[in-house]
Amino acid sequence: MTKTRKPLQKYRRVVIKIGSALLVDRKSGLKKAWLDAMCADIAALKAKGVEVLVVSSGAIALGRTVLDLPAGALKLEESQAAAAVGQIALARAWSESLSTDQIIAGQVLLTLGDTEERRRYLNARATINQLLKLGAVPIINENDTVATTEIRYGDNDRLAARVATMVGADLLVLLSDIDGLYTAPPHLDPDARFLDTIAEITPEIEAMAGGAASELSRGGMRTKIDAGKIATTAGCAMIIASGKPDHPLNAIECGARSSWFAPAGSPVTARKTWIAGQLLPAGTLIIDAGAETALRSGKSLLPAGVRQVTGSFSRGDTIAILGAAGREIARGLAGYDADEARQIAGKKSAEIAEILGYAGRAAMVHRDDLVMTGPAGARVDDGRDERKGEVHA
Image: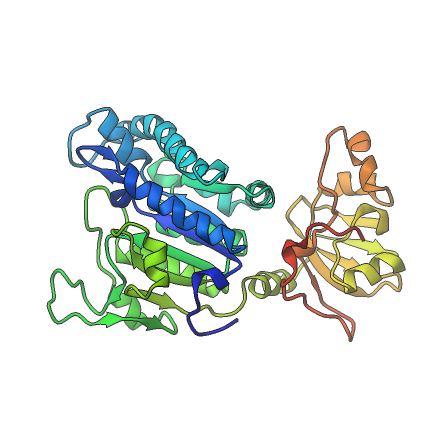
């Protein structure tokens, strides 16, 4: 993973977070011209082969305008009502603007539990990945109609960072009403110095964070730094840039001021390091020689190659994979609960629906969730060909 900035079109998968104040005017509502320009930028990136996801704020801000709610803080039930109204309008606006370039939008509403509870995390990730595979642009927001103070992100900066790590993005772009990180809030300190590149988020960098800038924003620089810690630790670079001009992504490409945060490693390597480091696998899969060869060439583990299933595990748990000689060769995240895994072990993927009564995933352990751990000669996939699709082991 490069430690230097590169053009947006050189990234593989980009998550773009858009703040409420960019999308919604407190008096007039949706800023349609800005949204159309933003969607044109997204279309330009997609034309270069970049996969794009959007984390879009604005549902509550748009809903409170439609409902003519007063300025200032809203009660929880007022926020949820505003979100219910605003989310419909927001999704329609994104769909219409993207359709100008024949791009399909897919709405994904998440709560804190969807990114923190492993099973729901895997379900959300599978849905988002399928949308990307089909060429759609996922439009993601927190599900503010049901989230409460105790079980919410409360800002889309951190949500965007978790989404970026969930899908293995290599760049997160936070667009807001400020053009980057300063040594102090620039509206309060005329001597504040702009920081172009942040190699590492240190305690000194964290101390520079300020608060929210407007009533439409929940987050401020504090949440952006928090997002940066989440993203960069997982190997995802991050950019903080102003979204005020039309075509904000093109502005970044043309050299507009923005702050770039260097990633700690590659997204795939970071996730697979976490998988390999699990101390106590919840169960084991013993596979045949053919499946072992397939895994070593970077393919997924399909049920046909599994000879035995041991342990009691749930989908998403870390499990050990043993070769025909009984030695551990890999670890991965289970695609099925243990009982289901036992039922389909040794069977062809086409038989899964008949055996389980529903059309499950083809892989017992998907290659994106698998890391080779031994013996000598094993390799850790760097993920460079992740988008080639499912390969049958």
